[in-house]
Structure formats: structure tokens, C-alpha cells
Length: 415
Image (cartoon, rainbow, N blue to C red):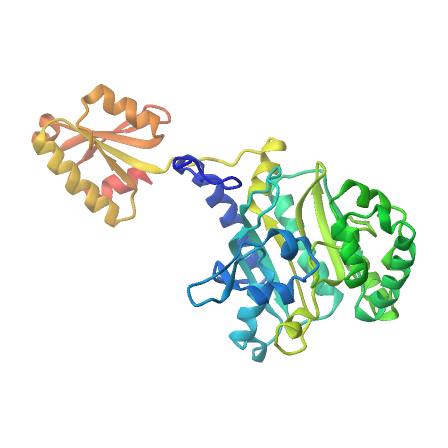
């Protein structure tokens, strides 16, 4: 056990880092184009934040949170989702006093004690965008267009966007009564968890993962038939704006998302039967956890699942050589010169590697090939005496003679 990562966790090894860095850079740049700035929140929060924000009857709170008492006896929970901490930071930082809307993005670890799934670990990583302060459906459409843009730019095809509206407290109250009326005749068939949800929050039953409950809700009344005029108009506006942006979508009346804070718009992007992004509007969460009444909308995207989707779609992330120059040497004097040259080049942001293993020439070249360097230079007695050496371009084997004391000349060749 000592030498085994805990179930549901996975190491990111150095050989895979370029894939993560590529994705993060791509996502960060797309978020910036939409006017979003980065936020970072702690990996743990007071448990009450998630109980009030996510909802007591959700699977996340009932089954999946890593919760413990700290040394002062306070209940602490490892972050099971990114929205509630972002909202807490928005309130605590009094960002509601600034010009609205406030747009932010984040990369964060998310920890949930759940069955390990394809592309979903107990500790996974999430890219999220949250926007506060605007209630217009044009913002919902803009939020949807961010992951849509991500998938387009990454070359992921056959991505299906499903949308729904789960209304507001006003129309949801009426819908809940209709849903309970339908479910009452099949109450005994519900799982034990859904039986507890029946009175407290019947909408959550639509999100149950139990096979028998999923079959039962297939014929249940749908919430879009119970929307109030305001929610209905908002949903129609969203559809109109998505069409104007040439974003194809399908209405799926069974989407409710797994968190209680959602209202009105909810959406999911699906590829090969797997949800690769989900989000929606949450106009009451800020007020619910102690802030002013203010609308908000956002989404979350699992990075592990996104990487898996790229693999399944045969999309390769380009691997750039991570070392610009390997400095080999023969003899102690050449070793000293190599170390001095490497230090000078690193000061100019040239990535260098040295022969720290005291290998001979042939093993040095073999090593340089293995670590995928761009260029190699070997210094020996002849090079030190003449002040000249050859820089070999590993891609095609071409060599260029350089003055080993001409730092700028060397850099010009390397770039």
C-alpha cells in the first residue's frame, strides 16, 4: 500500500506533463478571450458551505464528500466542486461592489468519494468558468459558447449539446407537486435514497444513477411544461441566441444536473455517451450563502475526462522537445566550460541539460536522443583549444560551427 497511490487517484508523471500544460494554456487563452480572469480558492472549506450551496439531498453531500473535524473541532470538507468556493470568494472579497458582470475562471482539484469511472477519479481536476451579475440569457449563450469553442479548437467532433430549463422556485414548486403525484404510485420501487428525496426534493430523483429509478423517471412529467412566463421567455431567448451563434443543440427535459443550486438554464456536452462538460445558471446561490441577491451562470469541465476524450477521438497533443541544448563534454576542463556555458544560456531562458552521469561520447548521444533534445554540442580538448565547436540539430543531423564564447551567436542558432 505504501508504494501505491490511493484508489481513485493518479499521478501525473513528467512524461505526461506536456499534455496537461497544453490543455491548460489552451483553456486559459480561450477564457481570456471571453474576458475571464483567474481565481484560486482553497482545497478545503467549511462543510456548511457545501451543505447550503450544493444541497443536503444531493449525492455529493449525502454520499461523496470527504469531511472531517480539524484539531479545533470545526467541520471541514475537501472541495467536491468549484462553484461554491468561487461564490464564497466573490462575497468575501466584496466583488459585488465592482462593475458587473464579474467573469472568472479556475483550475482546481476536486475530491469526491465515488465509484471510480471512466475519466472520473476520486481526485480529478476541473476547469471552470463562473460569471456573476447578469441575468440575461445572452450570458447563458456566451457561457455555453466557451466549451463549444474549446471542443472546436481541439478538433473534437460529434459533440452533442443538450440543454434544459429547470425553472425558478416559483414554477418548480408547481412542478414538484406534479412530479410527486406521478411518483407516488411507484414510491415502493424507488431506491432508499430517492425515498428520502421524495418529500424534501423530488427533483433530485431525476438525477438518480440507480437503474430502476432511471427507468421510472423516463415517463415522468417534464419541467419545461411547467415553466412560469419569465423562465419560459428566458429559455426561448437562450435557444434564439444559440441559433444566432450557429451552435447546434437539443432540448433534453431530463437534465437537472447533480447540484441543487441550479435554476433556469442547465446544459451538458456529450461525446460518445460521456458527459465532458456541464453547467448552468444559479441565480440564488450567492444570496443563499450570505451575499446579495445577484444572478450567476457557469460550467465545469473535467480535465482527465477531456484528455480521455482526445485519446478516444485520436487527437494527439503535440509534444515539443523540452530541452533546447544538451551540452556534452570529454574531460574535466571541458566539463567546467560546459557548466559555465549552460549557466549563461539558462540566464537567457535557453533550456539546457548537462552530462551529470560522466558518460562517454556514444552514451551521451544516446541519452540526448532519448530525452528528445533539439540540439547537441560536445566540448573536448580540441574545441577548447580552437574555441570552435559544432552544434548538431537532432531533427535532421545538420551541424553548424560556432564560437563557443559567442553567446549571442549560439542563441541565434538555437532559436
